[in-house]
Image (cartoon, rainbow over all chains, first blue to last red; front, side, top):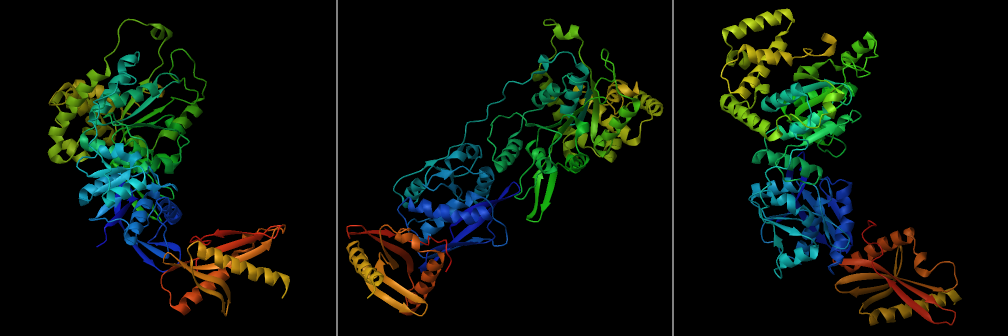
Amino acid sequence: MNVVNGVTLRGIEALKVEVEVEMTGGLFAISVVGLPDATVKEARERVRAALRSLGLSVKGRVAVNLAPADIPKEGALIDLPIAIGIAHAMGEVRVARPTIFMGELALDGRVRRVRGAVPAALLARKLGFPLFIPEGNAREVSLVKGVTAWKVGHIRDLFAHLQGSSQLEPITPGEEAEENPEPDPDLSDIKGQAAAKRALEIAAAGHHNVLMTGSPGSGKTLLARALKDILPPLSDEEMMEVLLVRSTVGLPLHSSRQRPFRAIHHTSSTISVCGGGTNLRPGEISLAHRGVLFLDEFTEFRRDLLESLRQPLEDGFIPVSRASGSVTYPARVLLVAACNPCPCGFLGDPQEPCRCSPLAVERYRRKMSGPILDRIDLHVTVPRLTPDELVQFEGQVGENSADVRQRVLRAREVQWRRWGPLGFQCNAELPERALRRQVKIDAEGRRFLKDVAGRVRLSGRGISRVLKVARTIADLAGDEGLTTAHLAEALAFREGGDLPWNR
Amino acid sequence: MAKHIELGAAGEALAARELSRLGYRLVDANVRMRMGELDIIAEEDGEMVVVEVRTRTIGRMLPPEATVGPSKIRKLVRTGTAYMDRIGWEGPWRIDIAAITVGPDGKPALEIFRDITVGIIEP
């Protein structure tokens, strides 16, 4: 039976690759078959040099087969299993039972850090195989519970371990992730902006996407950054998902339960955001999975980029298809967008006059319109603070993030209990039908909604959004049914409700 | 005999002596095949070795080992493969170069380059 295994990444999943080695006589040559990419083909030089560093000279023709043969193999992480496979075929080491090896070899035999250690650990756990990983990946693997793994610094130590002459250091479960780092920034550090803070609280509680409109320097970015700290901490399962994506990209890990916050620039390419590329990698939207994706200067983004975000915002995952295969990356994000109210940025500002022509404002607004706005439940204006407010150093500070988060957590639990049996997690996910049937409104509220809907020409979809937001507001307050107060507040956050050009 | 042929023959004799001193077991020498000639065949550590001997007087433009170019290597690979076939050798084999430089005082210096193909040239 074949006992030496490596892995290759497919999306955020690791697949087992069996490494078969046959050695025959002849002039020395290593040939690798089984759809290797260029990095894997080059492995033969590294493998031979690394084995030679142990005084092991490979002779004759070496055929390496990577099975299954029809899946493309990528990355240098397959160096180590090839080296062990050759040593196993030469009778230098004995691998007693099926084992997974991963690591890139240096010419002197050191084992280098690779990406994808967490997916490999999950695979090893599923198969019940022991796992050998580079020392540099030890920390991320230590966060995966229930896997038998050893860290390898040099191939010499691995040989000694397999020959039984010495033992490698096993990986012990890492220390429990520290509860939470200090909120940065804390909500209480942000002056004024009561409406925006309230919008963030509602967004966090019901997982509603937000659009903030405001003049330059009004604090939109700061507010967006504060959102990640009022979201509930990551659960064990969510943390594993975040870890998985980061490990796939090869990013360093932070073991805190703070949700990811990714800000993308409007010049970003679609591939960098959605994932893809010649050798498939997850994009920013997947790195923001279970956290916040922030699009600053929302109107400046290319249309095709925004269009490609539509589907993942709905589904929570993003399929990427390329000639080399099709994979699915997770992409459940809370979208926070920010933009100026007009090209010059001062429309509706109390002090600075707006210098834009009505036509320019109109054109600017058009850029924003589109199906993506349909996915945004909360619209809020972020006004600039007056000099008086800014220079005021003492006096009333707002609530801090920890308190707001407590409320958000409670509201989430209410939603969990209510929608869990129906298969939803939060109010924003509710489909139209469930919404109409499940959301209770009192008689007065119903009259009020009908009245307002007629006056501000609220569309059908607009009403659903108001209902969803109102539901979250009620959950934050701990109320069972929707009343006029909830609906009125929700109406203030509707699209175009509070924008300068509608005043 | 022409001078360069004499020099070459002396070089091959020297290489054979030195190689056996280094632990190579001599198997055959000056094997003529249809596609070329192999200078020395030896065996070391379970591996068959085809040794190409190059002898040069110092002061020439190139050191002896540099005179084995890609086409010569290909030729050695082909001839070597045919030889291993003929003697029925199924184990691993390799190609070495024994480079001999004759100094101005007439003293030869030998250098051995092991496994010159390092798996880069496919037979």
